[in-house]
Image: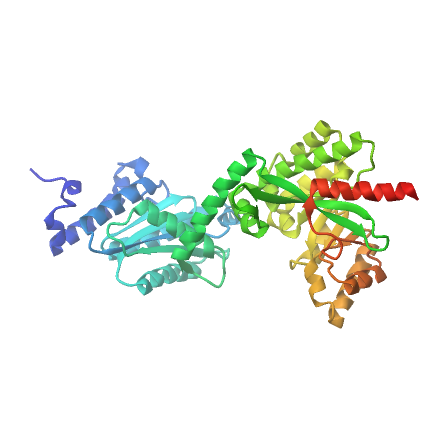
Length: 467
């Protein structure tokens, strides 16, 4: 009776030249079984490559049969594949996927101990035995070259993340995860084709996971709180507003530097929960000031670029207005330039809706990107915050000329201005002389707890009353 091929994968026969050839033929034949109408759920209906489950299983069986070899997993992804379907149509998108699938099938035919998979949409994976990393790099470069030479009406960039393992019998799913991490480091970069997974990436991944886990606990236990940096009138010295900034106070580590956790929560999407927590606390504070019969100053809140994907953005902010009875103009919205540029049309609609509801919209970090001036033509803005990078070269006459004309242009457009990052008297004098009175910066105040900010306002109001 003929033995099942799956059963003999682990036999000593597989170490012989005949066995290796049989295995190679087996993998090739198994990959094309769909053509006979079998194992449909195990293969992608378009490219006829194994789906992730079969890919993992087949690669795992190869590793078990030949544990003495070195193996690698490559994950590949098309940058902005949605744009291909949008501009050229789904048929052209399918043609592109089929072309990549055919490239991978050729490698499966040519190389023993190799299997390719189609994970989802434009995401492919490739498992193979290798002798050197250069060999793997050549594969990535060759596939990208073939794609570049393909007659296509849209410039397509294919990026590769590679996990080359030297461990005995490595776990396929773990290798794929590592390759995916490497892919995230290089995806969409025009100057790089591929990236190998490194221990530094693994350490970074573990750190991010720890931050993500600790942040979830912090959100449950009120470990994320607003600090407020006052905004001042540089002529009178009075506090005319504030900006609420998220601060994380860890029970064991104390204050966590924003630069350490903000990029992580943006990457994981947790920034939306963090933002909403801060927003709620700002509205609550403004409500308390109003209930005490005091005169509140506007305290702006930050709206992350991730909110361009947040369909509930306007409703969440409206619900805070209704719940706390605070006028929208007392809580301006600060958005960075990339919040618009990531999904411009979508964010325009959301911001337009919010402005119609009475919210003031400010563009934060103006001048830090390359499209700031163009944004002024297309966006309805109430305020612009001039980025502190403009102040870093104030001794340069050319820089001063640029800033002077920028302030003049904003006045002509009837857009309010505020400068951030003011640290010296010279900077203060220059902006006041050129018509910009409002500022934030360490020359005046650093970010502080809400209670400390509130005390400053009370003292300011007392002095005003005494006069």
